[in-house]
Image (cartoon, rainbow, N blue to C red; front, side):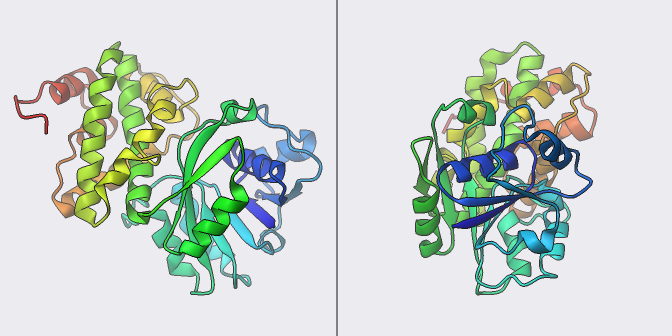
Length: 318
């Protein structure tokens, strides 16, 4: 199977390495002015993975999308612009696989919804979600992930072609729930980092318990299956997001409450803004998301906000 991976950041480059490792012909696309792509062209490594010579590095989008499968791993807020570029070319009978987590701020749309706007019925769309960090996968530490799509044939094909001893894929059965759960877990990751930064790490158990219920309520209100919040897209990703030293969102939250800068992308920063809007539209109480939003966007005192969050008025747990 010929596969193009669009996005040469740490996750996109790992996916290219992984899919080649399991036996596919892989092209990795990045813009000509991308510092990540230039680094790979010059050295074949970004310090996390080393790409073998059999993986083609390409900076021409028209040539890149000649593959049967197009895997996309870019900043979620840049997906629409990318799709506008892609549709300038022939894209009949392709599988689009989204390997990122987020919600478009300007519209509140899930990422698959954005892609559906630009492709016709001859193309299939899937999402690849779940726990795992490049640093661990590259060392051979296995994990479980999920692939979901509205089309069962697409799911079956991708799970069969992508599975290995390193990553065991499960079949998703709730595209909406999996996308919302995957996006929301980054917000929980930021909250976890804030707790770490305030030396309140012991509250992470409560954060995980209440965070999962919060996201489950939202998924249910939107028409999805609330059990998705307890699957690999959300709760199953907490170890990698809430505790791991490699979690960008957790680290961002920790440094933010300490008044320190964090240079890498933390998708949860954008996602929380979209989730607040969605919660309002569906009239769902999102106390953790609101707390994170108040700290990030309203300059509220993190210690006070988080203390209020976990000392809310006495109530039944369920």
